[in-house]
Image (cartoon, rainbow over all chains, first blue to last red; front, side):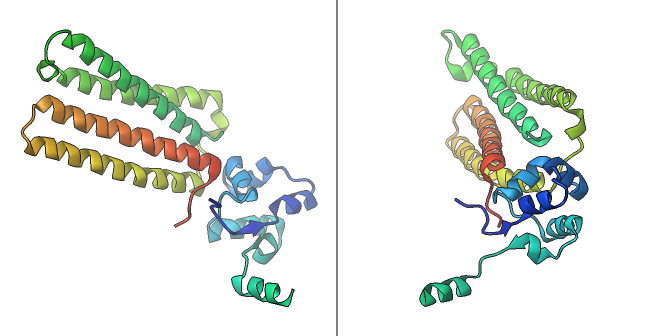
Length: 81
Length: 142
């Protein structure tokens, strides 16, 4: 069972921001390090509020951090291929 | 491992150990007499009290090992807690339904009391186990 379909770019964003550690990000966002690990591994989908807080830490829009697969575009892409 | 996860491990271990201790005391007291005649009230109340005290002591010990993590409880911890408690609620409900059937059948109080206590222990064990699995593998977001 995959708990969430939400994917994210937190790992690459951390490295792009001075190799920020998971613990540093957790402190900035106000959550446990384990929660950051769970989000990165796709085992936990954060609330909208937490998602905004994470995006704010990196200074980027929400869309640059999180992505959700669009079933319509996926099936369209399959038809074109 | 977060502090909340450690607390769940403590609770899982304590409830299992205390219940096994309770069963050992009851069986020890039985020795030849039928189980419904065994005095079970104080062992049950004592073991519940012991479980509460041991969980508090265990949580304090867990806090001592990682004092910085004690205050850190976030929305994921809360979500996992809710998820486990819902499962535990169903287990407890089924157990209490069984105890109700025993009461209607007018069986000895010993069996009714023990059915309720077992329901409590099973609900605690299963809900805590579900939480610990959720910490490792995630949980559905409904």
